[in-house]
Amino acid sequence: MECSLESAAKQLKDANNILITAHIHPDGDSLGSMLALNHYLKSIGKSVQMMLDDEVPRLYKFLPGYEYIVKPSPLMIQPDLLVVLDASDLERIGKTSEVCQAPILNIDHHISNTKFADYWFIDHKAAATGEIIFRLLEMEKVSISSQIAMCLYTAIATDCGFFRYANTSPYTLRCAAQLIESGIKPHVISEYMETKPLDSLVNMVKVLETLELHCDGKIAAITIEFSESDNSESSEGLVNYPRNIEGVEIAIMFKFSSPTTARISLRSRNVDVSKLALLFGGGGHERAAGCSITGTKSEVKQKMFKAATELLRGDIE
Image (cartoon, rainbow, N blue to C red):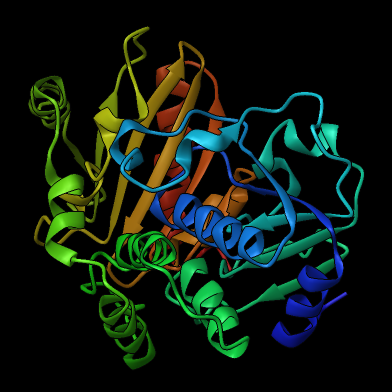
């Protein structure tokens, strides 16, 4: 059932025990939104547990409270409500759905959302789920702590490319301004985000060497081969390099999480790549989306390049 933001806020206030989760392969928006909502709910006396069917990337371990996020396991609380943030379908939360049978409230901003939850509030015009959480707290007249502000600023800033992407709106910038007034320092967050281990920079050089162009230079792709030592930090932001090449309409990053499974990140300038992701069971936004494809490396690439070419030709609606 679709609900208003006011109704979503009421559900949060009416529940006593709340489990919060977000999508696998977590990013700044999913983690920042989770942690900000957790801080708020605990401040009004709720019993809250955060669960994520994935590791928290080292990149985001400056966010206050991340250490309390647990992997799917027997619940410490019996939740009245499962809150799913920044996820467009139930599969995106992995095994968390298996350990909790409570009603689901989904708060999200993906245009590809399948409306899987019992109750959902979806605003695909919002720059980030963190922007929706900020609006909810603003509506509830919450005094935003420095912890909440750091989480929400990270959520919003990372999902709009630090205010460079097309999803940045006047409201997005007003949110950021108010969060700065709450005490966070943007340069400190940027330093956390920009500081990378040496192996990440070495990996970037290797990945850029895999660059390939297709469809008369309109499709550019890079590949990260499967390795036991691969981690989520090593590929952060790499897909933007092929996207920034002149003439490229669709950028693709293939990251093989096993010899026969690739996690695929899609970026574009003007093309709706969420349509491309949906073909393979994924989702996302018009300019940024993702999915997974199984098969050998050549099979995965052939499937994706064929579909991307068809999308550019207008054969996919």
